[in-house]
Structure formats: C-alpha cells, structure tokens
Length: 68
Ligand SMILES: [Zn+2]
Image (spheres, rainbow, N blue to C red):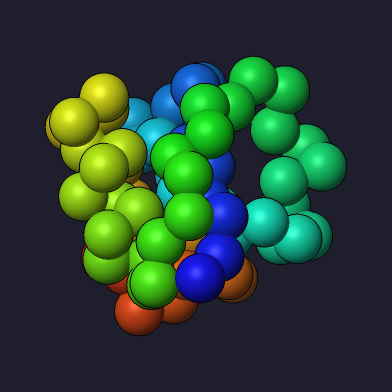
C-alpha cells in the first residue's frame, strides 16, 4: 500500500495530478490533498476524481494511471 496525494492546483491542461508518496514532483506541489493509502494508483485516481473530475495519474510515479 502506498500513500497518494492529489494536487489542489490544476496543471496547464486542467488536470489535477495524482502522486505517490516520495514522487520527485511532490516537492513542487504547493497545496495537496491526502488521498490515503491505496494498493495502486487506480484506487487513488478514483478517489481523487470524487474531488476533481479531471484527476489523472502522474506520468512519473503513476504511469499506469497517466492518460493525458
Ligand atoms: Zn508523481
């Protein structure tokens, strides 16, 4: 199980990136919401979509869930 976070600020294409704890890019995220622990990015992105419909996995730490 890994802990996941969603960026509260959308990136330029409108997506709210979902990151796994320890991701290199998390240090650049000013404001994020804790999504709790998930077996994979699938559960984390599903949870993030309850908050932000445009949530999407980070290409670096959650490539399986990265669609855009
Ligand atoms: Zn990431």
